[in-house]
Image (cartoon, rainbow, N blue to C red):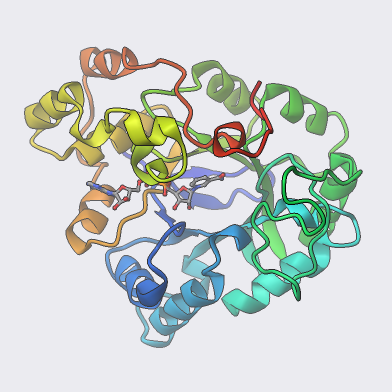
Length: 323
Ligand code: NAD
């Protein structure tokens, strides 16, 4: 059982909070207030991305929290991600600089390659964030001939030049991590992937952790954020109201959300739940004063069925990334 609320990153030894705040889909109108409330509730890690389209608003929320004396910059752990259309060695630096400007920050604590998918460049003047949009081809993705070793070299330079304290990856599988490890000068500090009881990714997590890379789980609550994006997201029984999770939550007198987060933390995995409700914001962080019995962990493990919700192939993009 762990009651330590952070993990330490390789190379820098930076302490990354085990519970952070996910910034995807935070309602555009109220981002600043939500972020401010999250800082107030004790969140120190904020997980953003170009693709979430709200980096400037999140940055304003943090700025206000710093100005009001709730927190100091150095107590925050800010995470952002390089989008697919900026993988070229000519675009990594300018993408990161634009994002830092949006956040109103001088450095990211952690900057991730969002997907191992190099897409044709989209000029920010034409569309920002570009999402999966491709200017010359509406029907399919256009890949750019940007090998990951060139992208990663640029990521490493961001560290050299102080724009990112740590760098990492997201949505990589074992093969792509292994390849990266064969040439990197700076090893990835973290891997961020989809993990919840329907998709525990047991061997991926164990192997990546054995390489000294910390793992962050996204979409800890399963289908919640995908109801409008894929068939599986629409039709799968939500984990937050699943009978098995409910029974365990009742046993410990906690919420189902807390059970799902604690289940990940017990494996040394960081979590980044997103919520805009004050009470949930607080309760999602309250996962260190109790622990799950072995039998309950096993019961949750039994829900494993390989069900993935964030799959570009299921969103009509014709890319079976995890095949
Ligand atoms: P999540 O699993 O955190 O679920 C969010 C949903 O659950 C929201 O609808 C929220 O209102 C609800 N919720 C939150 N706490 C609750 C509680 N205690 N009780 C009941 N409902 C609750 O969703 P997510 O947004 O898929 O993932 C979290 C974060 O992970 C994102 O915000 C983003 O930062 C990151 N992410 C990264 C990637 C990637 O490709 N790297 C992909 C998806 C998400």
